[in-house]
Image 1: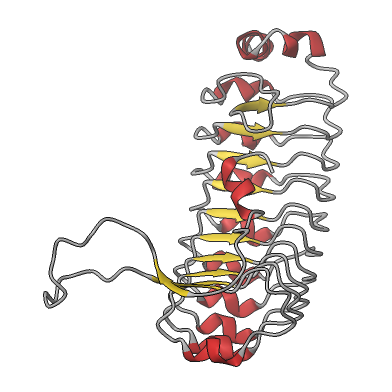
Image 2: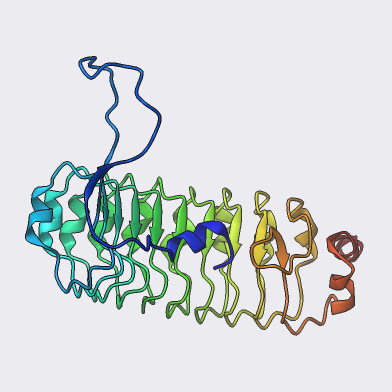
Length: 291
């Protein structure tokens, strides 16, 4: 996927069975009777059970904060999920889900949602009501657009839309200014709008394996970028101001490395020989052109 974060999105625990458990951690120094004592989150795993529906008893476990239903055969998520008001992490990856119920918008404590590796063609508008959402992975589906209301997800930091059917980056994405990780790899994207400049917090932008031929000049204003993956596109020229991205510390070849990834593009300016010389040579070349 390109980074440790994106690889975590596609992983699941390989342990079968299910049990109600508390997250491991250091003992709480405060006694249970102390009103300030913090209770550890309750975690319920129902992974690799080959289940075609969610057992009804799960919806009565309203204290669960982390629910893992990944890698089953679930064709849908029942509206009863709304009963799980305490859920902060919901993992539905690796199922056969074709749509999510509008009731998912009632999970007002939801912070992390994994729905990668399903059969989703669209996302519910109601998810925008989950204003605490910080991580959303929708990779490996059939998504081509997102609801405009997703711009209201003002705490979203990590968004994975890779391996979908996106031709135009959804306009709402450019308005989520809190994003520090954006994965759009393996889609059908042909261009990046100048509005990319609004994502000032971006540290990682992965947009490899698309059909991009031109980079907008405004991408050079993303001063926080530490990883920019443009591999396997149709890019012929790089913006002269790219040298402004000083946190791109190298020309990167390994997918997990930070830096500028520019392999397998039909570069004309600069020539591939300049790129092969390393990031310093590339930036000096571009700065000379600018001057």
